[in-house]
Amino acid sequence: MKRSLRVRVSGRVGVVGAVTALVAAGTSLAPALASGVATPKGRVLASNLDNPRGLSFGASGVLYVAEAGHGGRLCLGPGPEGSPLCAGLTGAVSRVRHDGRVIRLVTGLISTADPKGQSAEGPVSVASRHGRVYAVIGESAHGLPPKTPTSPVLTAARQQLGRQIRLTGHGRYTPVAPVGDIDYLWSAAHKKLNPQFPDANPNAILVVAGGAYVADAGANTLDWVSSTGKVKVLAYLGVPKGAPVDSVPTCLAKGPDGALYIGELLGGYLTAGHARVWRYSHGAARVWKTGFTAVNGCGFDSRGNFYATEIFAHGLTSGSPVGALVQVAKNGHRSAWGAGQLYAPSGFASRGADVYVSNWSVMPARNPGGPTGQIITFDVG
Image 1: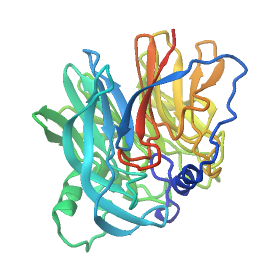
Image 2 (image 1 turned 180 degrees about the horizontal axis):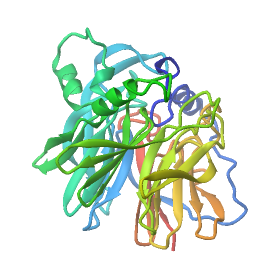
Image 3 (image 1 turned 180 degrees about the vertical axis):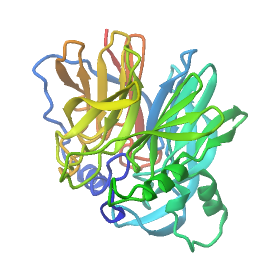
Image 4 (image 1 turned 120 degrees about the horizontal axis):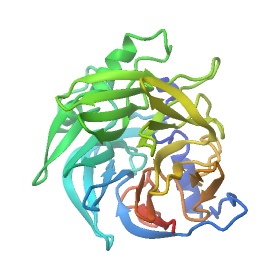
């Protein structure tokens, strides 16, 4: 998307300010999302998380969360909402115990946010396979101002933005591939696809045998990253002709049928109801389901039901932080969960009879008098 009209990956342009104002004013945030049937009530598993985004379970049942951090003291200039964009080394990849205790596995990762630590970009997605934990950091080093002076924070930004990393234990990590940088260059070479290029913002990772899939919300691509770090663009997710903005793919999930499912934030429009879910199989991506709004996370439960987290269920132009967890049953029936509980939800994960959602995903761990990042779990029975 155009940087002058940029909707950041979690759909936060012009809305975080509305969230803050509503909370400060004590405004009632009860949503009107009733589906006509009883839906599960969520339970808060963990609080005081720092802009929590993607969730993923390891094989041993460990729940991992990507925390985008809360920026820092180095303020660079206006961000997508007009306020200063402040950078710091506050991003993290963490695990959450059954009792809700949060243990930071890697800290000191790059993070950018507004001066209040809200609406951060940093580590945005996490995935695990065979005991190895991977994460992806949003944006691209190519998006940094070219004449920005050197500092430890900006050096970290140049080294980390847009990177896929692998955790190596003892608080350390190793870079795997500069996905964001490669997608930025790919988009610059494909301006005929999108006049708003170049852009890149990897936002979701799904690790499988031999490598990982990555969804890039800036380049609007599905990528393959081999185990040796080679990046290949598999598909470009376009929008209807004449649509004013991009598709903005935000989440990845492997379906019961073995195909790959990709949720998007916009589908070409900022208003409600235009987001789609794509199905990628045998080298082709096709729209699978339509009628969603601002999808940020997605996945399947053990019974084959599909879920999408809608970060702003009334649309990005509504000024409302109300979100939802939408279940699409195997028979196609849809129901919206989380009424009165979900606000700016993002990541999704499922294990056994429970599904998990990162909530207040645009809020920092320290927010006096206001909400902090959470993880909420729903028992699906």
